[in-house]
Image (cartoon, rainbow, N blue to C red; front, side):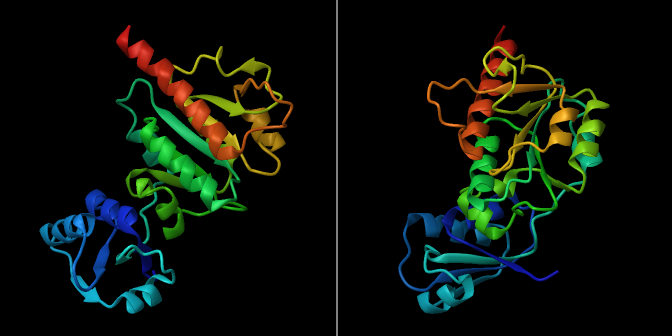
Length: 249
């Protein structure tokens, strides 16, 4: 497959640190470097990676963006996982936690959700193949490199994927503004998959129907809803709070 270009300090540093991609070369601007670039250079050298010095203009041409922060990397695609593999690696986890995204289109929302998911202890993310943002280098940059550490599966049929998860002990909670249960009264402490809908229409009807229960975030304002990444952050951290409380009890 055609190599991709990661650029920016966080995506490149986290790709080197995660060691999940094939990294063909690391490209850095010539001349004096700041502390973070020096650290990336050292990490690349320790990993035995090819390291090339180029002019800032050449790096801009390679990255296609002046916001490269002095570093880029030519890499293979992010390795994705299949759903059965994602489930099997969680067999020993008594309370696995997955995030399912139903046609989230905006790369900024996807990147923000991935970044929060890593911080909140989510074990893996399922994205839809059609009408959805893909885990591209741009998303890695938006996620501040978090994407390099997260297991991601892309599924053709989200309803079938939910059905498979339910057969493997997961309770599936759909986020819906019309959900009858408040996020703060729902039990999110067990094996859990949370489904976040797309920006325009939320959860599709068949996806909503397949969920075990629907939960809503209480709101004071009359606005229709929070945006996908903010709603996702709220529910992921409520799940994190509950799960942490159960572990401490």
